[in-house]
Length: 94
Image (cartoon, rainbow, N blue to C red; front, side):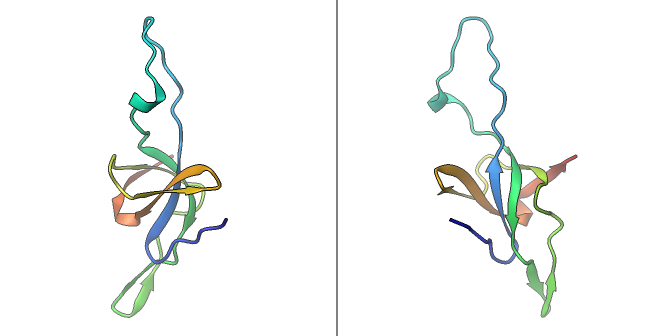
C-alpha cells in the first residue's frame, strides 16, 4: 500500500530507540514509551495561503522530533506510522 499525505501533512515512521538495560529490571514492550523521533517517509504538496501553495520545509528522509501525542497513528503493511501536520514537528535532527 502506498500513502500520499495531502497539503501540509507528513507521513513519519517512528525510529526505535536502542534498548538500554539497568540492573536486572526488564521493561515489557507494552510499558515502554513510544519514541518521539522519526523518519519522514512522504510529504504533502504544501499548504495554501492567499491562493498560493507554500511548500513544506521538510523533505523525505529527514529525521525529525515531534510531540508525544501529535498526529494520527496508522498501520501500513504491518508497520506503524504517524501522519502529522508540519506545524506539529518540533525540529529536524541533523
